[in-house]
Image 1 (cartoon, protein in one colour):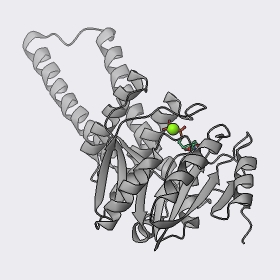
Image 2 (cartoon, helix red, strand yellow):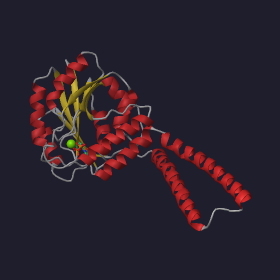
Image 3 (cartoon, protein in one colour):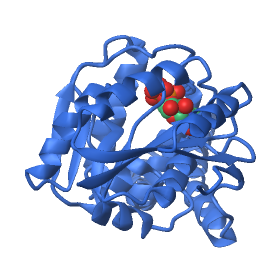
Image 4 (cartoon, protein in one colour):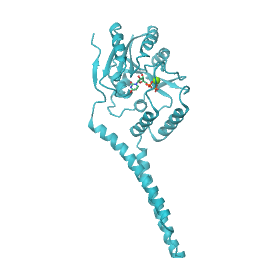
Length: 309
Ligand code: UDP
Ligand code: MG
């Protein structure tokens, strides 16, 4: 029988955890795999860790690691994957937005020979329309400018083989963007569609601002096109300036009429310096990422983990 490790990132999910555990246990009872849960407490400030400890106490299939502070979901996923030793590894959220009853279907996809079975939202119901709009825009944009396929609507909810898990862990970058990493490693993926479900309790930890920053991180991690755009903008402006010089020379020679006054000048200065700052900003974004990578800081610090039994 295959072993399945389920990685669950947890950040302030005290209200969801008991029902999550109950629902998942019920589903696990019916699947032909020996399963274990790995909770990664991402520095929760509520009673999540106590709940997890209690679960680990009474159920030997439950393991956990707990971070010294909140390091973000990406770090939590990394820690969970590192701790997952099963032949198959699943990743799912603690808020039951990833329906556990999809696990059997995912498992049978793996049995069929797929390396990854992943959930893909076909609707974004229950999400603010403005958030859906920008999310769609982001996926369209990033897939145009990145060679790596980043699937729209894909969640982190998936089952992968040990081979895929090892491949994901072989990417040692500090700036982790799971959706990109999963696309980058390749393998055969079966996409299983499902309808978006509302969070069980609590609130999403992703504000609009956090999502925007995350999308910028993802873009910088999986595309160099913004840098080329900066270069292309430089060339374009050089060509435009040549044209303008020519026009002014000709106008002055024929009509003795150089272009008038400072309004035009000021507009041009503002416009061009705006573009310059924008391009410097793009450069800065990549530089900042490189800076963080060269520091080689660990992506998380573990404060406590479940006692070995
Ligand atoms: N999460 C985490 N660290 C964070 C934010 C979230 O481990 O800094 C966990 C959270 O507990 C949940 C999952 O990541 O299990 C998804 O978070 P959330 O439901 O807030 O995201 P959404 O479903 O809205 O995309
Ligand atoms: Mg959620």
